[in-house]
Length: 83
Image (cartoon, rainbow, N blue to C red; front, side, top):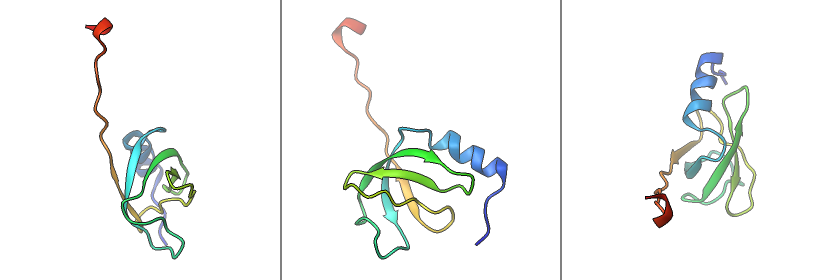
């Protein structure tokens, strides 16, 4: 397996900051959460893997270049007192 360079890892960290919500698209692991499981990024390690707290309790990482997630966009709301 080829690891990403430092620039790629930094790009991933900017694209998936801590707290980013993701949804599992595919994972090459027999213990993988079901496709469609949502989770929250807790960090990205030096190999580019996303460390995710999955909503179903799993803690399996998303391996760079092998597994796939999609970033979920959260809707922002404005409270009446912020208008």
